[in-house]
Image 1 (tube, rainbow, N blue to C red):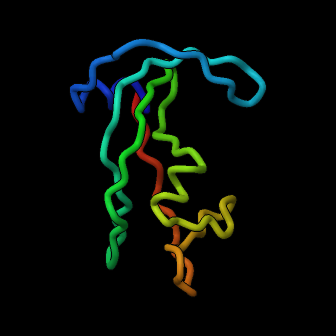
Image 2 (cartoon, rainbow, N blue to C red; image 1 turned 180 degrees about the vertical axis):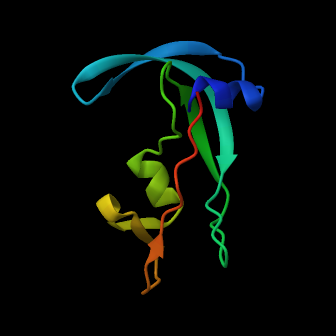
Length: 101
């Protein structure tokens, strides 16, 4: 989660942890747990409890593969932004990213 979003949500860092991402070690601020869901124009996923961490310099909200699975989202063609909810046959287009800086 980008730091400006964490601030807007009034999430206070509880500590820090190092993560490995793309072959580099990244220091994160642990923010605790949040409830998230996917909202489309005609459907919503169930609420899912997720661990929130913040990375300095990150501008987008990033989801782990395990969170994507828990939200019952199936990326079909991620490079083209196409996905669906589990069990659907049709494809959905991703929305434009919301950047936080």
